[in-house]
Image (cartoon, rainbow, N blue to C red):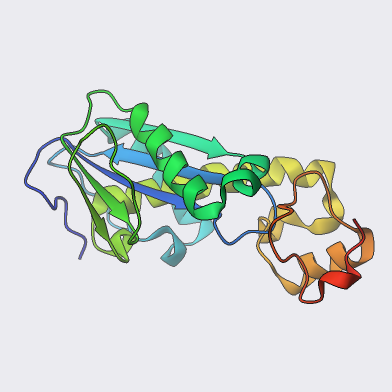
Length: 199
């Protein structure tokens, strides 16, 4: 059972990201402040939901949240600053969009940097414990998935509409056969044997 609040502050924001482990595309982060009476029967960690459930949840969260923000950190920035810093940067940008400003921030995972001196708490597996983090995980995942489906139209051989840029066997086979695209992360180990990569 997900809890609504960690800190006791009414304006508590939850934040999470999607796409850290991908070989291509952006890291997408979201931040959400939920009202005290928020509930939805199948809100949970986005990884435990079906695609259809996430798609139904997204407009519900956007309609009923006090505020939400979504930010994209593209593949070039991921390469430039590393994926952990990209995740934190994305979360900061998403929180920046919130109005009113949150009084407390809860973060999925165990790494974060203070944002504008607002107190925060990192929570491992927070997306399975707190509603606002779960809501942020749903928004981050659905926005990122939609973006990767658009990129798939440009580069259909990599099947991003299905694998969303994650390192599936099919994705890696396509990299081996066709080389990399402008959307691949150059600092990631794209193939188990880097020598086989056509740059």
